Image (cartoon, rainbow, N blue to C red; front, top):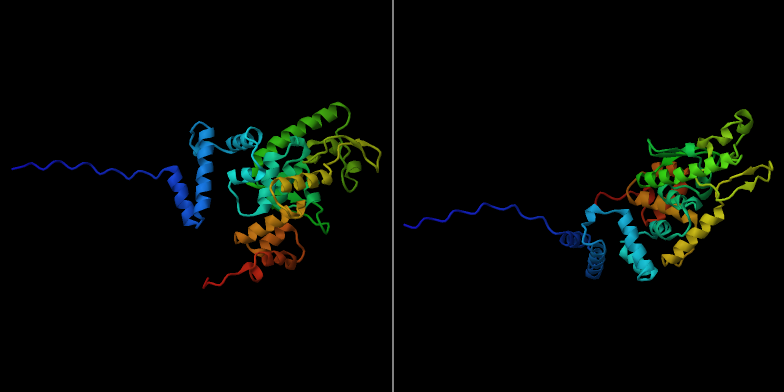
Length: 305
């Protein structure tokens, strides 16, 4: 009588490999086969560039290093760089990403400004007039003071901007201390606050988030101060980024604010909430973005759909 051989213990199914998961995700989202091939190819190049490290152990610094390698050493075209960093589907977001990765401007020349225009829905001058005290890192909010229509409002401070902004403000504070040591460091205060609180104009909390890289003479008071950054510098940076990203349309700082509104509505947020974040007096102004989305009023979809 033959003795049956013992059964082998059942093995847990192995988890799919990284590239297999990528392929499954792309196919579930109905990407074309050529797009799938392109994504897999770039992921392989990224992993090999970092000595076969797993992507879950890497982040923004490794992505920046890879893109820098492509631009400096392999001298690839801007369109190729864009393909290497997967598209988010909307070119407004692509502009602000290009500014972050490719702008040659030093930190104090305001790379945070385009991030805030897109990430918080700010108008250009609202962004440039931000003071340190207007940023609340704990509550993840930004207070916009004396915006359009002379109204204050609160908007969101993106989680992804907290560390870059804190690093930026660390350098701004060093600059402010240097100005104080030379006898400067005072900023313009609105509504006669400088007379009421004579020391406030030199306090850190009242300083500009995006200061000018140079001191200048205030044309009204004749005092030498560090004003906020010039709007033309941000406008030029965004136009350069748009050209580098291969966008052949008029692009301005306000384009990033439009993208902020469009993406929130695409994500299903209530139009009244978007109205408050943008600071629109009339909801009909906000509803313009529903036409951009090719949807009906209030971005409502039928339950049948």
